[in-house]
Image (cartoon, rainbow, N blue to C red):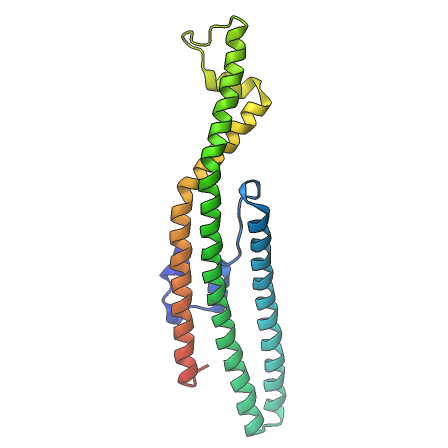
Length: 205
């Protein structure tokens, strides 16, 4: 992402813009609805790529044929179609970037909602295990006894709850930076669209 943001907008290529567009979440910590929306997003990106490739191929074929039998009107039409395709495509990519930012923000809301709940469940299960040990006469407060480590090593359910809580809290810590990067990426994609539009108006596409 840093490399993408460092490229001046007028030097960006389509390949640069789509490189960081695919959307991925940790599947273990995302709602079914958001997972479905992310899949739809990636499918739309795939469709945009396929559509752009097919359009470029057909236009290139037309231009190749015209090179053998030049026709000024048809040539202008094919070149115009190529420019239109380029502009429409980059506008679609910019909309996808904005949509991606919205989806990542929703992911952040879900994670920040679920992280305290997960920690509460993990703590409750740990305390339940330790209280059971204490009821059996085990001194859980003795020197050198690591409560967290003992529970993690000897109780699968408690271990899994701790893992989930730790993972969610780590995602919470990293998401603000991810959203910042995605937002900057979307803004850079918009600058790319403007640069393409300027070339379009100037007849340089």
